[in-house]
Image (cartoon, rainbow, N blue to C red):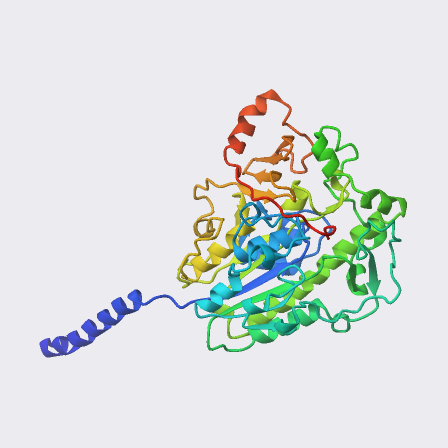
Length: 481
């Protein structure tokens, strides 16, 4: 018996050493699936922004990981928001505030998130709209369409005669502000279907390197042309108006707010009798984009990369459909700054070995500026010192961890911004005008508290956390889109 025990001891010793050695090995670097959905506000089922929104695929992604219920965009326009997300640099530090500016003119040498991953051993690829109407070929190993074209858009079926539903009100009206059901299949429609097809193909492959894979879904960006079956989900006679709409919602706004809110689109749409049709088009486009997200998620789940891929889904900014008498984006109100943000992290990644817990909802005020440092932190890559935002890994690990940060959304002129805390939102305009809202009791921001003396302490506390340095904005040549 004694000799048997002695014989086994070396094996026990070897096994113990092997276990210690395994524990000391670095965790395998995870893949990253980076999904962008353009111009999507909180009309997502799990966020409750509109009772008729149909987003089962985004909802299942949120349920499988962490849903940030108080996430905000860096800017309420595509170019400054996407630039900030992909560089990690806030608009007040880059000087890029609106859609008319060119990223590489202001940031000629700044490294994008995709390139950062590539330089640290990843295969970085993408498809669809990730930046504002260009690809930045130097920042990707592969792209579809070909990165050399610098055109992220694939063929899409659009009506030959346009406009279809909304007549042009004048040269001020964006040519893509229009909506209509199309008698085509998803595949015939192209566009986001082709993006989701290419991304799905990459997810179905084994790769020699870990990958950073960006999927840019364009809808519900205008025009709201999608296959008819998505319009059919929302009968026109059942369409409900936005829950945040209030007819006299401008009465308590300061002058800067009154100028920022009403625009020519909303009265033109109402005059043409197209308000509910526009809402129908937006809901249909969201349902279409959700179906494309579903194709991508299904491909991941059925492929070889299911268990070692971080998934993050975000939108660059929200959208008004009549709230504050406004249509489009470009404002600092919550309907325009609050965006979907959901993340699922598998176990075993360097920055979060336990992974995320399914069904977690985090109410801390966060910003999409944090995506760059969060993903590099999760992947175990060196920190990029130029990033403006804090990593979200502490919140992914424990949603109730103390979070001293506020979330700032920068408007198109330096000095104007929206600031989101857990309970309050402050909007500060460059001329000194301010709005304050208690979003716990007033989620649609109907009651401006900034003029009430009893809230002076709240305003001062929020201003103490606000940015105080703004790079000047170079003159731009043409109108924002």
